[in-house]
Image (cartoon, rainbow, N blue to C red; front, side):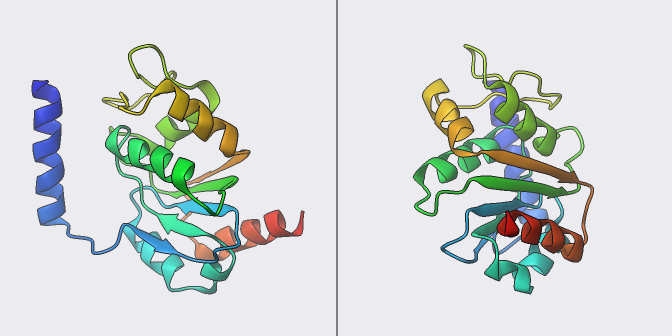
Length: 165
């Protein structure tokens, strides 16, 4: 309980120190591809201003291995665009390892305590239910691991190969 409280305070401090007006940008409503830029805010903004948006449904950041992934799981479940492909690109957040945790969630799910199986993050405990996690895992057919890639052009090339399949 105290750990979660401190995490909430740290999160609010980060929002104050590094205010970001947009967490996500919506692209082509007919696309089934999502781009997660992890902690790379410059990549998020570059992608949102590029022609990549005509090929992807949404681009968003992911900073934490708990609240951020909770929100992402809920979005995918509620999404009417039916995201099937998720590209994880950009720099993973130190300590939190949100990208590694997201991959672990998709591959392994959660245990009875809501902990992401195989996550190396500091506090990979989710509040979403096992059923929600299972639905998320079933909806996302493929996660493409492009962590450390911050070049929109390289990401676009990969997106175009998905579209051509």
